[in-house]
Image (tube, rainbow, N blue to C red):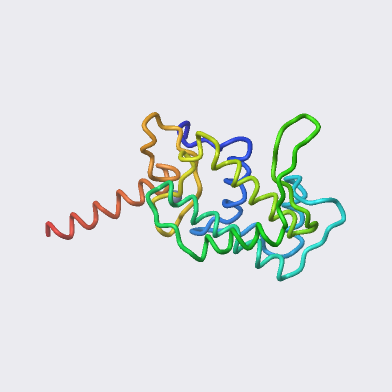
Length: 184
Ligand SMILES: [Zn+2]
């Protein structure tokens, strides 16, 4: 749908990471350490030749779900201390530092390499995305079983479902059934 386009730049990167799994119907893209490495390499978050362990995969998925929780706040959700702790741990483990490039621009860069560094770059992307005026448009689908990250391009920021064709209609059908039952 036109008003649920994918975000671009850092917002798009954060959205893409959160949406590496479709919680409702699958698939999970990050099924093993190799697919994690492939995803991080494809998004230029990790240097060539780096590998990942099962523990790295667990950390990456925990960070992904913490970011999903953070985005949920843009849809009126609660921010959970566990998600905040996971984000802070990833930032600390990657040893993020403020850096000024030769172009005079500032950014956060990890001192760690490998997956820890890649997770630091993802935290830096979240940091930059939260400073973007469009951060509040990055939302989670209102379906509790879906929680897909979508970019709300509607004029008044009022979209609640990832796609009307699936979740919106599913919710509507459920309400219709409940009303029908209540009326019977
Ligand atoms: Zn949905």
